[in-house]
Amino acid sequence: MQYNEFMERVQERANLDSQEDAARITEVVLATLGERLYRTEAAELEAQLPKELKGHFFARQPPENTRQDTDRFQLEEFYNRISARTDVNYSQAKKLTKSVMSVLREAVTPGEWQDALSTLPSEYAELFGETR
Image (tube, rainbow, N blue to C red):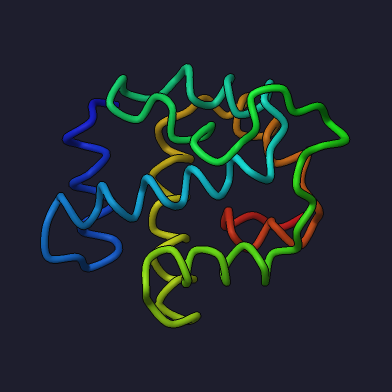
């Protein structure tokens, strides 16, 4: 998937005014997801994304994190972080996050998607539109 297509889909699904807004939300969501994923899983997802999205997963990660260093916050905290970083309320943060995640899911292979999802607690299935 190309960058413009990714942003157009995020903009449409999140009902945003511009692609710039979509890019800002996408950056925050991917960076927050990057805090929750181990570097290997994040890198494998990132490898399948347009070059303009490279680095977002690692924006908030320490350079030498290990699996034990991965921030293990729950889904509610995930939404709270998105809310604080985008200056929107909690319910808007959920909607925006789910919009970005739905496009992310379409942009990566099913195998990589499942690998990333399998590293997260089952409550995160809601975020990804999955049931487990």
